[in-house]
Image: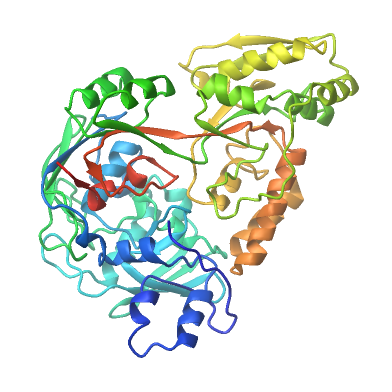
Length: 540
């Protein structure tokens, strides 16, 4: 895990650099070093993150050669080699084999430099991006500022059908300002730009590329075979710009949608690594010699959703009463077999650098629940609660709440509905139900997508103008300490006032052969946030 150095230097503005430690020995003064380390709230340097990014350490330990086979939980005929169109874990893992981004995320979801050497800003609106020199595409052409301009601006064109067009709308302009420099201007301040640029859709392609039958990136692998919905094979890029990487000679990627079949493929030796392992399968995988389960704490959660724009959730007492009925320890064991981390009715999890540990934990307290539910006038009545296997663990959570509620005089009528159609017909529509939210790359994206008054996925219909203003202010704040305090306030507001009960954060489970080495999990997605092919090796 990288050490984090966070701070702010008003004169230099906001700097994120990938080479601070590399430069330190030769003519780089201690004062210069500290200025670089302390100049940006997103700055993260130190052993693992920095040296992996520059490719100067891991070559000493990894084994070269071998073919690794990865099976994901999804594939379709819409599988793509165009980063802008990527939509699921198989797509993300595929494009990371062939392309690099300007940045990538480390184990704390802080950005590290890749094709960018540093990013500078004084106002979080206008950013100067210094680009890495000496990088070439698979076709031998050099990496230039024009490639960055084209790669980012194409997302704004509706014809591209980019999955991140709504995010790209904040790019006012992107232009070359030197032989190895690009200026990015945003429509409003966003200190998370380096985090946004680490997402799979923003991987860098060659200027002018419109044909994606063969990927022409700067990545660790070149394409050998690609059949949508069937498989992808990449072979080592012998001219890769990161010294010593990749270790693997070949990577094969394909989807096995059925979890039991995926586990069988792993344990029979057909594949080395699978994602989306059910908690019920962990004993079998761990009990088979030569295989293990990797547990990655993440921000994924299944939440109790109480609509605050209709009865009974328009009573804050009803909402509080229901939150006090959440027995978090019991939910952790019964619904997730222990593969979960206790949460506190707010969505930023402990792996996130903006997590507020000082928020008092809301306990399971039937007496307090009874007090609030009595004030809400619902004791003695029947309240429907809708659950589905579509929202992981929600049926178990609903039944546990039903049992606790019965003891204090509230009847919860658990309505189990099928997964098919749940997200379009039930989620965010019924008075009391459940959601299931995947991790997001930044606190801002999570709060903007799910909690702002105008959010498309504002699950409980919660509207709070003060909260909305603070989200926007935090987005543009470049001082890490001030920004962290703002996010603490935002988490407190959600905990106290929002119509969501978040009992636990779900641990991500992946199955793998013990031959796979060099793993450094990232709490955003499987397969080291889909970048594993570049860094791991087989100890066969």
